[in-house]
Length: 128
Image (cartoon, rainbow, N blue to C red; front, side, top):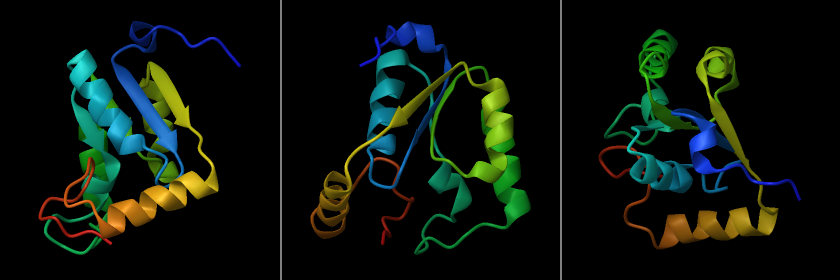
């Protein structure tokens, strides 16, 4: 296992990457609270609030994304690879989460069946 650097070594613009249900949003919220840095959930920028994950127009999403990454500090969860080059150019640290498929499925079913609220959910509470 690789040595884990101290949290401040990641800087104040951190990308959190991982597969679906790997814990990206939960970690982003925890890091945001710990470091006093705004959390940005790319799913919330990509999708319209108060909908069942209706996608924003691409230009609107790209503008929201670019506005978010031009600030001095952020912790962003999500991939959206088409906009990743801009984020990589500004990021001071990257965290990649890996979990087993079984763990991710367990989280998905827990989220779907039991969680009323969760980190990174769309405003309005609609979730798949």
